[in-house]
Length: 190
Image (cartoon, rainbow, N blue to C red; front, side):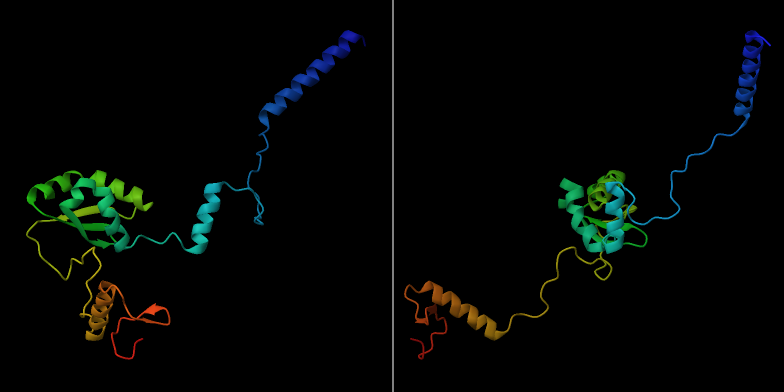
């Protein structure tokens, strides 16, 4: 055997090895571990999402949140269209317009307004807007977005104390008790 024969044998062996390597599937690199021990690197988004889920901070939007964001999302329209009710189960926000023109304008802008609201809320809580006609009146169904007024008037004692306080501030030389201005005006005050 000459050097030329040895070279041909080596060349044939290399060709056979290359041909058999083409038919073998390449090993798939494993990217996931079977066990997570909490020390694996995670992205910031994943860490924040896990924290929100762990602390239950990602609860669905409430009606009060949606109604309070309406003024920001609606901009100029909010002066003539108010949010009156929100159903979290269906994602339906009910709106009440001052006139038919604002009803129509709100209906035409519904998609943009829904996108703005969801962007402000950070969720897709609002799925549709329902604009009620201007003559629609249903106080039981339409809670106000404003906080309710006190149910009972202030007590007479509170009103007397308030009047006495105002009178005491109006006087130049208010009587003092232990360095504190006295507002009762009773004879026992010094």
